[in-house]
Length: 226
Image (tube, rainbow, N blue to C red; front, top):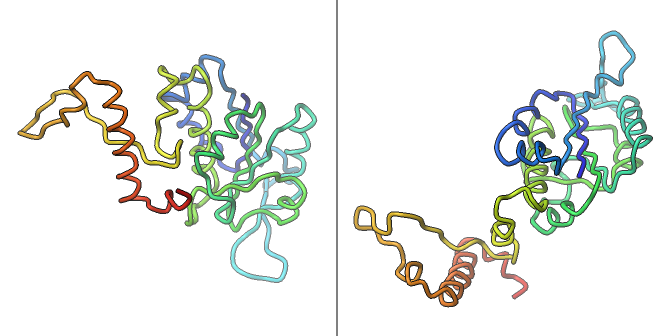
């Protein structure tokens, strides 16, 4: 998989891909991450990528021309399965969406900044708009990093145990069950006996029950279709 990210501040996105699981995925050649500084596509000496809104109002808007030049250049080199714009008013990111995106080959992500991008960018270039929550960030870079992390960990070979991602929260519209590790007793707090019983069919039944109960208590909205 290849992910290209268009950004005004590429430095924000450097560190997430230089550590832990994402770095290992890149080192293994399982994913390529390419950052593109939008200012490299501006011809004026001040490298402006924003301007005032037509009609007045507070906040600057990212101009269409440098974005057009960047996207057109990248599209001339390869075909993208999705061109994503990170936006607080986009479709809410969820696990099903992430599962679908993890199967793509080439993804292009545009990070918004300031008051957002010229609407014509969204109308003519973007195939999908994604939000990571009902709040506003200073830019789309951190949101793009979240999307990349969620996608990349699902690529076969990225995680040490490939079945691990299949038991994560939300994969079955349920939260994950509680987990424990050694010691089996600490300060009088004991691990549920079923987990140390060695009876794996019953352990799986317990985990399924706990997933349902936790979801019913903490996220009953996930059970609306039951």
